Image 1 (cartoon, rainbow, N blue to C red):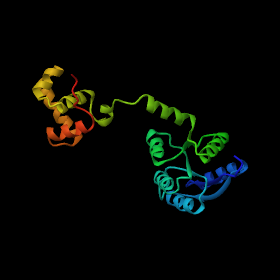
Image 2: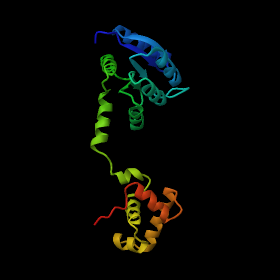
Image 3: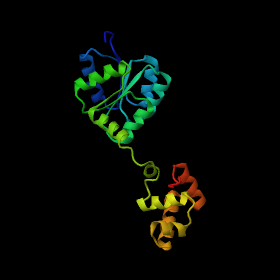
Image 4: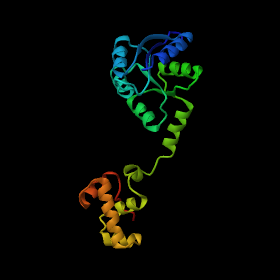
Length: 217
């Protein structure tokens, strides 16, 4: 790219901001501003209109997820590159849903950060190697949607809930799963407690909303 990339750095640690600023300037990137929290990033992004906002996620006084969402909604041309120490799936996918174009860990090297800044400024999406593997794994190994819907249930409880959603009685469930009726009643009671429902009708509604209860033929 021939034009100078203009960057806003958002991080609550002044020493880290200073080091990152020096790195970017040495690479020919113009650092137009610095913010120490999410609200500050939103304000400066609107005022300065940088090409890229480098965003930390968890900061006192306002987190980076909400700031990313606001910036990408109000100024779609600005690319947000998350640079954080958090590598958990919740943080990664929350940032993606908020509109971040890139996600790097703070342990990334100078060349990787420089490449990511240029890519995000050009409108591309870029993720560090570990984050890219997480994203790929998520989409290639999607969990059973019924398990994802009710992770608090055991496998046996999910089987019972599936049959409840099909309109089966406790007697029918016991026969289908080769269980005693007392065991089925215990499973049903546990399901109601874990799903915070008062009766069978409410459990059926929740289960069917999650895709359970379809006839198995």
